[in-house]
Image 1 (cartoon, rainbow, N blue to C red):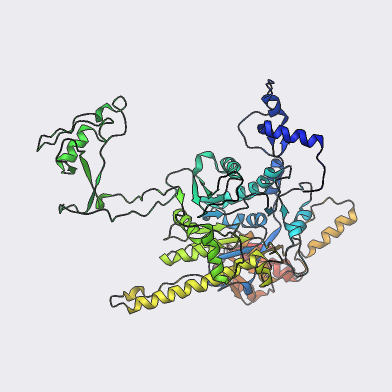
Image 2: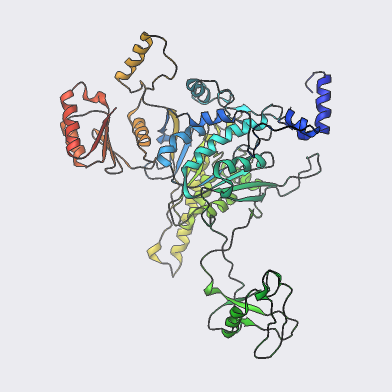
Length: 628
């Protein structure tokens, strides 16, 4: 009840929706569809098979705008910052994806995301004011309160069903993020996206456009609800969700497959070839399509004729003769039986049976909630995905023997991080990059009352607690292993990385050229003065190191060695001279044989001779030298 009277216009629109729902798009009349429905012969404008929506071209522009932000390390929030290879990034995910483009291009094996489902109650960022400048956009996505936390007014918009661009807003939010995410995937990488009925149809079309329809792997179905929901007025309880899977390129098998079940194999006749199971030999096609497989099959020893099935046999006469000669056929005693083939376990190829599209058997939403409740002893997060479900997907999309990176840029409560650590108990070395916006917790929520100001705070604490729990389980397993008499001492302990580096999205440490137009020479002069020293006023050296590292294409797990006066990145890949410089420091840097050296121009302190000599020495040593 909104207190407003119903106008004749509203009555007509309501009646038209009931009679002709097909002519409405996002709550508004599509006049071309209405004319066609009424029998008028018209030509649709730009008629072609395409997904289109309000703001699509502007969303492309938002995606293509470069980011002037960076990631700064937050050691105090991290666990084992210098030893771990797991990463948690706190910040608006569109900007984070832009920042990661150079360093992680083509390096991610698998992406899993659980984005807003657009149920009508979601709040999320979408570029609803395309006319704003880059500075306005950065201010909007970076609005913070007095304590430094991003405010809901600055970050999020509620996308209600009454909104005239309800679906368009969601697509404008998703499209640029998915395009940027695709760039980060390896050529053999895959992406999984959780979704429900509200947007699954649009997401399929959007993914077809971004990844290509030929790279569609499958639409997986998860029975997310154990008990029926009797609140739905339609009489249908929606008990499932979907997970869409796409590959970056369509070049063969994309998922690992299911574990092969071998318990049914046995060797009742002591066959020298080992355990076997019987296999069906009835054909698959009629005689008109495969005539060479339609013949009478006769046991050469007993003379029993088993005739030919309606669809014939699976093998032609030549192949069947070979199977008979190799004694691979199981002959029934009666002519009414069906001969079957012996399938030997040791002759199976290494390719596993295909993975089923029905996932998460007996794993429900409530299991994800229970995991959070047990870690925190309270209800701090609504409807998280269960780690077993995400773990099932990670098993399919990664190699436990490799160093695969799993990216989740809608991290929520960090279920993906928890699932990766849990899975690595199998001896794997998978790594995660989780990105979560500092979305404020409701002030009335239990989480806020417990001191968790944002969803990102909950996620970081979950990773800490889950890591401790997993390490405790491993310690107990190691203790039990050592008590075994036949314990192999060469593999004494399971070791696992349960730490994580925390980074936060932040403004650049370097001054940026103003993007807005300059109106007079005085403004231009003032702007040029800023670049006498390009370092921002509040820049911190360590933050500068990571920004230069990212902009040089090095990843966040690069080894950073802080020497007296310079930094080495991955031994001799890069060297940064940022605080001071003299001839001794230059000689020390050169002795490390770096491939590239970056120095701040201001540290030469108008000592042009030292700067010139340094450039010559670097050139003679074959080192790329650059000053900022």
